[in-house]
Image (cartoon, rainbow, N blue to C red; front, top):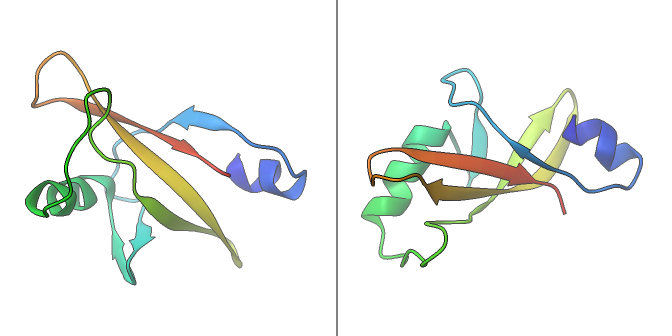
Length: 88
């Protein structure tokens, strides 16, 4: 979906599923969403009041690599989180 929007020079926001099959490239390493969250949580990056973290990652679709911003949002308890992606 984001690749089609990028081809048309449009922007989009979407909620993504947690999956071990989808990898993002963050600081030169490929990680899934859960591993990326655990690395950010262990780092010294502060979390914010309305959201936890918003790293810039790269996502590869076919031969094309595109930048995507992931935003981690806490649900009611701190053990569950959702994440959204946007191309910019």
